[in-house]
Length: 395
Image (tube, rainbow, N blue to C red; front, side):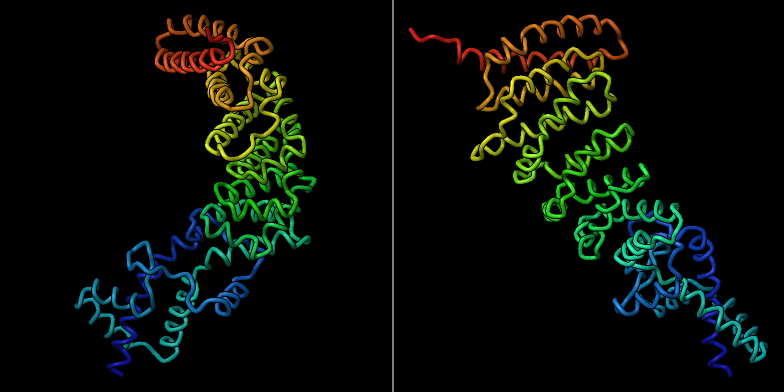
């Protein structure tokens, strides 16, 4: 029994180490993305069976650190041996020799159960569980909320975002945009925005599944959080994507932006995001000189709605408006005289100069106001340069 007792002694020592790890793991089960709670709608046994069928190795990290896991159980055992006290190990072996066969069996089962619990699911498996929960209409609404929150975290890495459609997740999330629960709609839009951010693959998939018109409609929601997340998703879809921008224009996206910019009763957060998007779209056009500019950039009503924001009392909104105006002035299709005569850009910039001059007397925001004044002067120079090209008459 000597050899088997020594072997089991090592495993019992490992059991103590694993128990310490599991004390924390039982409180919060985390994926590699961090911060995720396992959905309770699936039994752990189902998850483990799916894990074994789909992957040859599951969930144990490659780095043999205390907080990172081990590449194999042997690796964990070797760590336990290397970090154990030989005297303690000998005492444990002697204790094992005094155990009855029944007690030995019980200890072996405890070790096996703990090893099973250490098998953490991959992000793909967690995504599958969340998607299955969303497809399960018998689950309570709180499980659907939790499933969406899990997906919101999981889609942040680009590889996970690219897997979402392969797992059937995009269709499910887009379907939830029509859910009667505003929180469900909000989180669904947020997921689509995160997955699409700077990701042409997912942008194309989301557009092909017809989500853009749904999201544009949600921007008009009376539930501000839903509207802001929907606009975030729209921005993520059309940013640096000419095909998406053309579809956006075809669906009257310019009117949607103009309505938000020109309506002072709309939540300030939505107006900030909107004018930031305008500036971003104009900058993209400046960088894509070989491509035709979107028609709404030369619409005088649209341009005036942007210029008028420079009169806002919100400095952040003013700054974003100035950046947008500067980019719009540099486009080929915008006309200097429209900015001058219809938008009264000269007057707007002068009024802003006086406002900023007064604010400079307040020490707590002087630095920020000085930066704004510098940006205002830059816009003024760009405007007068563009205007000079039109008004200059050669002699």
